[in-house]
Amino acid sequence: TPYKIPFYCAQNLPEPNAPGYYKACTKSITKILEKHKGKTFIVTSSLASLENFNKELEYEISEKGLILLSEKFSGGIGKIIDQYESNPEKSILIGGIYLLERLMTGMAEKSHRSPNTLIIQKLPFDVPNDPLIQEKSKIFEDPFREFTMAELNLKLKRIIHTFVKTIDNKLPGNLFKN
Image (tube, rainbow, N blue to C red):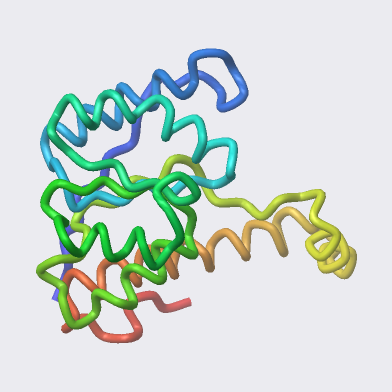
């Protein structure tokens, strides 16, 4: 059975390090939120992104009567999940992959309450100057292609599979085949 998942890719955004990047992203995200409202998770790739989106979206979200739950700003993961579960229809979550996985794992039996909109701010590459990543990269002839892209591919598969499986917990465990 094919599964149809809407996909949106923002166009004409500035480079991530350019001035105005987060404002432009916020504008795109706000358009999505106008349509989907709550039950939305925004995956960020770094603490700086998390902080910037929290700052940029805080006003936009409250103006729409929605609740912004942001990792590091709204409490610990347990508190954020509890707050989300108390009002999922009006909740917008911002956080990293770990928060998404914890939330979705806890929602397996409550799929009617789980997020139904997933926004990935940018591809969640590993931090290249992390000593563990640097050490692992040494064994590859082409570390970017053979290690970094492979790790990214696995992360994206895990994110999407966790998300889709929670929405429709009848999905087979082998949604992604190599």
